[in-house]
Image (cartoon, rainbow, N blue to C red):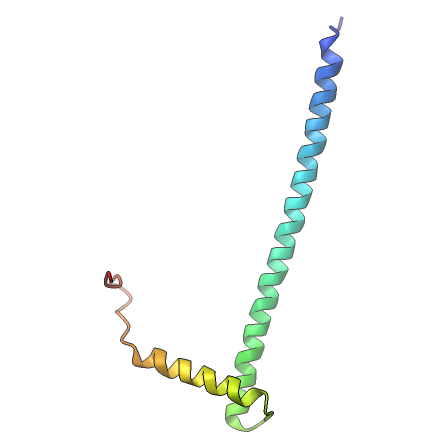
Length: 94
């Protein structure tokens, strides 16, 4: 024998279940999008590094690439000139 409250409770839990499934589906879609964006970012990074190598070697040239590769070279030189702590020492507090 069911009480008048039971159908209401059942509807509530059915609605809660549906809402939870919507959240799960949207989260799953968001995670997939994030993974694809991260992969795309990595591909662009690899492409940029390869392009810089080809510009430096003279295999390719383009006026739009020259200043970008020059700036990358400047930044790499600046990083190389900055003393780096050994991997087992924590950075000094500053």
